[in-house]
Length: 485
Image 1 (cartoon, helix red, strand yellow):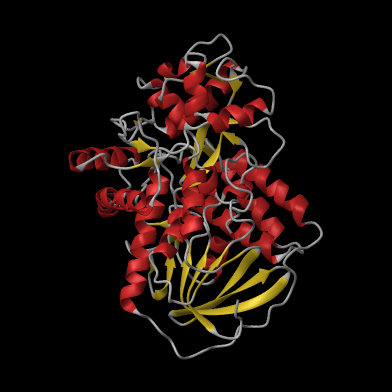
Image 2 (spheres, rainbow, N blue to C red):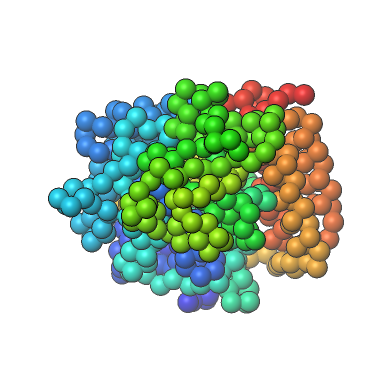
């Protein structure tokens, strides 16, 4: 890794979006991929359900319609059309490169159905290990250098150009220059007490962008997954993929009653925001626990289709599919993010790109359709790489980085970070009130005036933007549900 010269491209993040983009940048280019921790600590690795993709040309219109319906009228229709149409290219591309999706005995691709899809169109691999398989495949195919243990904590912006970044790399502060930078750093999961995200997903780049005058939009649109086992001791809670309900699993109360039909005629197959709010409301009204019931599955089928869920829950004492598993909604996906166009270009900064969950293309609107996230990473990762290759941007001016003052971490940051996570969960979660959001805003403002490290300061900036966005949207829509009390 060179710190005294510039790279053609630096990619911040080693999930599906960053790695698939890297795959489309020529090997002879001087490219560096920055990974925050060990490579598999990313949301892609933990993705269970699969990749939503149009089954064929005849399914394109239906997939577009399902995505728009889930997005509750706030999708960028051009982005949706582009993503679905290009799903017919990226899936065959992966297969040509050697990736193996699950198939039936006759060799046909297996598709499953998830909530708010009008037909089965989700491809999977390794049963419930699609993300893990895809991540391993893309890591092995990656033609460029990748550096671990990197914490990016600043971008060098001067005028309309982003020249580089500053990062902590193996406990040493480094300054790296690049002709092009691609942000593929993921979402904001670690801002919440209960989440399904990798421990590395903490919204640092969002906070940096806010500092550097780069727009974030739709940050109130935080998606909560309805079926998560939250009683484990780790920060990342155990996701129970939507594919379980797509295959027939049921959400029940303590008397094994399927109460979701009281809220929506689609029951378990209603969109995530509806199911999450239904569970939240039912428990508030009736008390008691809510469970995921899976005993309708044949044991051999379950072990083959959902091997990782079976193994993970066996480690904490559950015998699946026989046992009821207590569930709760948990934060899952940041729908909003850093504003960009359909090539991932950040407006006004032609050499800065953003792709994947970190980006806001408008493709998800107010509520992401199940399993469209991996597809988004593939389609827009490839588009960014192609745009970058074609334009050949090069700069000659090399401004200096400003002197870094302060510390990345201060002694009370861990305690304050936990308080932030609890506040975000309680006040900026599934059901929001104006009074609760205002309490959260007061908390963030109070902490920002304390002696805190830069990394916590970046989290607080992102949290503040989420709260401000939630206060600004006074009407409930999609993942944003607010009671104006």
